[in-house]
Amino acid sequence: MNHIGGKKHTCPLCSGSVFQRKCKFFNADRSLTRYALRCGYVQEKRAKNLSMEHGVFHIKGWDVNGKHVWESFDRLKEARAFLARR
Image (cartoon, rainbow, N blue to C red; front, side, top):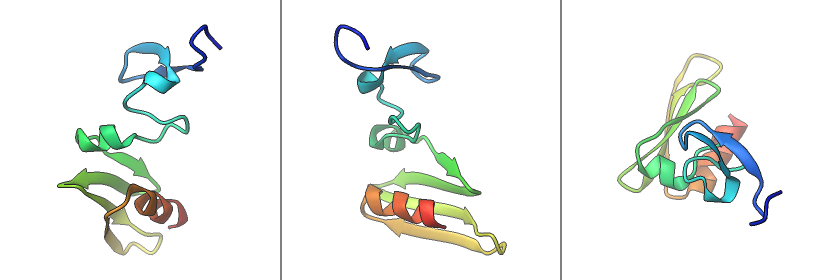
């Protein structure tokens, strides 16, 4: 801990050690923040990509059977839940 009370972590986009609560790109679990997704960054997990276009969150990729997947969500929480379970 530091004098501000935030935990330190290393963020590759913030170039070095920064306070976790000040990092605009990564959450504590190393997933991309809403800000990073709005800026055009894409999160990859299990052969699928999470991105944001025009205020809509998209999951694109391939499932375990080789079938193409493309789902769209209005809420980031729903998109992350879909990404985690598939």
